[in-house]
Image (cartoon, rainbow, N blue to C red; front, side, top):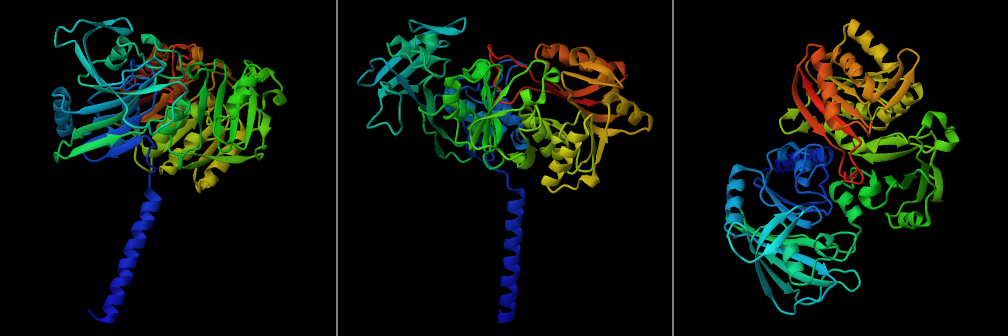
Length: 559
């Protein structure tokens, strides 16, 4: 090759590499922190404590399986092969293909998969390896151990001291054991540990000493690859001193893409009536009373923010003075009057000086991401770029920004000029020209009637009203009473086959009644629900018996 040819080749080669690098930078998607391994057949994750393997009921919070399937289209066909208890952390594998499903199912059934757990206890432990065999029978929320009998209920677990020094820190007076379940019965490690006098620390169901969590961790999984036959070993290091509430959040939130999420969600996180959000470099605590010394001390343990604020939760916001509803600096450095946070790779402006709300509702983060990815759930895709979206009750236009970034033309409708201007700044912060999109000031009912008469039709209509509102044109709006009327108006501007998103934070409204009201309103307009996906609160807003569901959202494809 001539010198000129070589130089040309080098130039072209450099250009190709440069283009590939720019493509990677532009389309790079941060990896979920919980992800341990993925190929064509397998997905292996480190499940945090406090998250089920799968949702226990339709209107309960998502399990790790449900959440993953609705996070990425390439994970839509995940299959559950084995399970971990809600309070157990560690390695769990899902199959992605029929081959993976058949192979792993056979391996687990044939006891070819080797599983090793670590447990902590504060009771005396055996000094040598022991094997425990029994039959397990369910009795309410727990399992009872009896004499070894039928194969269908038999359970076998090997316990052994951990060789050498534990490669992790433990709470004071805690002892460490390895546990290897030779069968796969529910709760078998927990039951057998209790049977032998060393119940797991935190496992009060089986006689363990109360602790912040059940200290059981699936640390190693050894299996054969479904396609290659190669022996694979997956490990997740144990961190028994970490705050399990923080671990739950940080396992599922990409640090490069999002720095705003809920850290403490009331009773579900052990703090009844107290809520804490991370908003960039600041913490925002909320409660109906002044923060207690214990709460102030807890704030110091939640990351390393520059400043911490407190906001009084007011039941009747409209009757309170603005100075009473705005957050107050509790300690540390004050945030700028306007500052940006990062969510799903996008910038959103917040402020602690604009009244009750800071500018973005964090519990809608996963729904905003669905607009960005155009993916709602397995089999439920959103329109391609070029579609038109109407965002009613747009507030600061968070939904609209995501839709615009996905290539849609958006119309944002709100009763506040201030919030629409805020929305324009959010567009600009993400390098989206606000002039290419519409911002309408006015009453939602009034404008829905106007748009229907034009006629104007949209591919997607978003309906996320406040629980209570009031306007001169439409009077008082109460979600439980007036939601159906709002849906009928929204359906009037929705194209056939279009997508309707409906959401409410009316805590006392049961999800079943919420969905019934929407579906009834759609039918009353001679339209048909073709597809529906109910979306619970995101995992950083956990649902529990003490902190029940308040946010109800659903996506509908309407014929």
